[in-house]
Length: 374
Image (cartoon, rainbow, N blue to C red; front, top):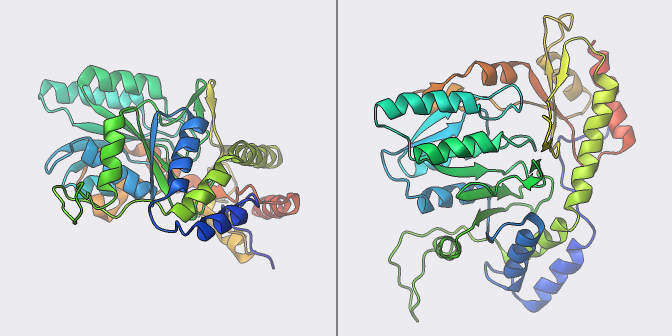
């Protein structure tokens, strides 16, 4: 039986030609004209000022910590309902994560909980240095009130939009409102470079420094000289060529995933206890993954694990929603603000196959398998 994957890569057909051209040019390392072309194309596509192409979204998160001046002992607030790559780089710099729970409207960080927390911390004159705001599953967080709070309390805002390239918030591309923004091109994302990421900033000097740090922080000299601690984070010129081809089909990929979501919703909305990830007015989700909640009190005993295991028995990949960071053993000693909603989403949530390569037959197989559980 053909296996249906959660979110498989979808190439445009132009990538092979671009790779051949790069190989023929012999620019196959972490420098070359394709890197510059990819960064320029990314800025043109998203409206960002400066983009630095890196070998992963995690590398982009880490460099944002360094450029933000995060040091040992600093506190960095972070969405608790996220993938661990949003929070791990906080630990890389010896800082302390403080996790903030989600809101039901977007499933992303709650502005009201953030405000309540900052008010309490202001009374103690202990405001965290930065906020890592995550935009999950192709859905924007409620950026404007969060940005306003960060400005009011002097918190540096960083946006992890690794899962949200192409998502809009009141017409604006997600990930460009903070001091830094992070995007990912991992193999399961809407578009891919097989592995890769981008750090965006409005400041040219920060972009120049990010490229230096990502290239082992080499100083200008005929020999190898280093004044700063550097990293091997730059994207390959070959993979950048793939990225440029992929950027040109971004709108098509988003449209396909939104159509997948709509078909799932139309076919499954009558099932008892089943709800879909909301999309508030003024938001435009890419529906990177179609996410459902299954309430066992209303679904006659069916739960997300019943469905997941049944799908797996039929060679259909699905996955529970992110386990909140405050429930992870790695972060068991970290402060959590709220926590109940993200725990609820984890307990009842499931991501269904959502890739833009899915055929109508594939989608119907998934739909039939889910309905069989009821």
